[in-house]
Amino acid sequence: MKKVIYIVVVLVILAAVGFKLMSNKEQMAANAAVAEIKSDAIPVAVTEVKNEKLDKSFTAQGNFAPIQSLPLLSETMGQVKTVLKRKGDKVKAGELLAQVESNTMAADLATAQTNAEKAKRDLERFENLAAGEAITQRQLEDARLAAKSTQAQLIAARQRLSKTRITAPISGEINEIYIEVGSYLNMGTKLYDIVNVDKLKLKVKASESEVLLINRGDKVTVKANAGAGQEYEGVVTAIAAQADPTLKFDVEVEVKNAANNNLRAGMYGTAYFEVNDQRDAMLLPREAIVGSIQNPAVYVVKDGVATQRKVKVGVVTQDKVEILDGVQPGDQIVRSGQINLREGIKVSVLK
Image 1 (cartoon, rainbow, N blue to C red):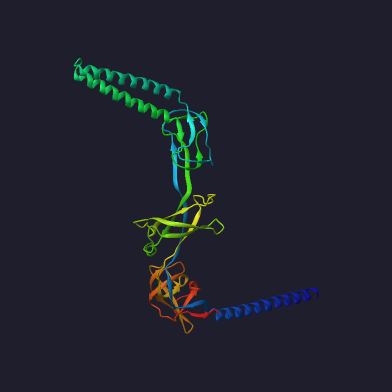
Image 2: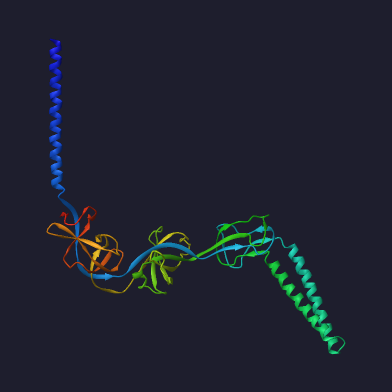
């Protein structure tokens, strides 16, 4: 009897499980059907083709570079006796940075001075003798050559001694120091890196359509991305004559730093090029373009259906594209949602 009851219970449980599975399957089929119905129309945002004023002004981003940057190398040999300027110090052109041992150079200068003075006296004596025809012309020429040679040696000795005083060739700030007291220098030893950030160059890229709108000497508004929105006046100082492999042209904008030199080399900056040339044009947002600017197309929505259409573009600004051919004013163009579209698919316009 118990065995019969056990079998009945098992059968009841199996029947309940089967009913639940069948119910879930029917629900999943219903949900799929609903989803299929909903997916018939792809939701998109559209924009209307309009005739507007085309503003050719544009912005470009780049990095600030110092107006001057100089690695200072040793022009003498010897041991460093004193170091007067270190990393972070501001210096002026001609200011003493370090002193190298100069005893040997000073002795050489004294010897050269003595030889030059002796040769000068000898030449004066030989000239007096030559006036009385007491010496030959050859002896006089030799005395003159000796005087010139010793004078040249004297100048060279003075220069060698002066090189033991290491001075700043430009004004700026010491960005790095490579020597210490006791260091032994050879010719060409690296001593300091000096940068001048009183003025900086903002190096940006301009497209082929943008570069035709700017000239050397144009005023530019510049902002540092890391700053608090402070604006600086810049001037276009250089425009590349040849494009790089990406068909962009290098443009340099010189910017005068603030009194506290808060702009630093390497920071990112944005230059705003204002172009006073506006005209009527048929415009679309850049995000409405499908594909590249070189091979552009758009999706036109008509009667709830999206159709791809090739277009011809003109001037391209930061957020707008001039349309020369392919659409007409009033056409509804897909602005977002193109990634899900294909030719002839139904769409629903988002409000």
